[in-house]
Amino acid sequence: TYVVTEPCIRCRYTDCVEVCPVDCFHGGPNFLVIDPVECIDCAVCVPECPVDAIYPDDEVPADQQEYIALNERLAQQWPVIKDREDPPPDAEEWENVRGKRHRLEE
Ligand code: SF4
Ligand code: F3S
Image (cartoon, rainbow, N blue to C red; front, side, top):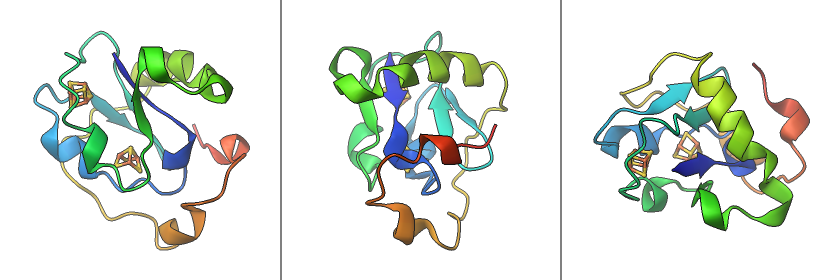
């Protein structure tokens, strides 16, 4: 499966959802996740993300490992998102911020 990681938090550009052939993205207030059961590992979403937040599960950076379980859990909690939505108005300001895990709203 593919996994959405920290750079997505408060950026939430949603370019990724438009290309997913199986609609396996689920959207929360300021972050998206991928349902690991539905993802078919096609990889087309990876280059769509302006902040490079999406990785295959075996290439998730060492300091982002918790996002594997987080995608699995939140995919069951949040609704499917198929269409692009406007990003938060201050999305650009969060692009290069690291250590924003605590900003994730469930
Ligand atoms: Fe969807 Fe393919 Fe990305 Fe998986 S890898 S989330 S199937 S676009
Ligand atoms: Fe997030 Fe990138 Fe998609 S910022 S919403 S993973 S395009």
